[in-house]
Image (cartoon, rainbow, N blue to C red; front, top):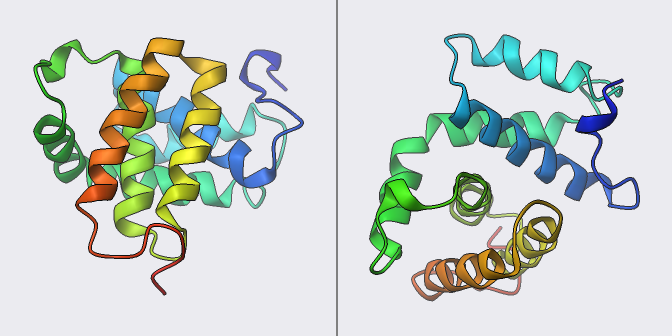
Length: 153
């Protein structure tokens, strides 16, 4: 088990999965590879729990990779007075996970996703990042054609 990869053990399994997806997406952004599936399996193996425990993280990563162009175009549209290339890589990873969940996981209330993202950001980002993330995700919320406080399905 790689101690550097362990997320906060006091977090719920779902939050640990979100953080794992974020960390993998962040790593992948910094060092892309041709075999994402193998890299994700290796990453999860180093966490010391089986793939079943991290099944939600795997689902998130697969979805984010599949929808990356759509998600990134949304981010570009939502950030005012900010070049996409200048967004901190940690913030970009957090936004990708959150926007994927808000847009494509209709079983999760968007406000839950935003709260979870801000909690994870406390571990991996800065106070200024928290404000930035909250601002962008609030814009996502304002454009949603579904309830913010309950699942759509």
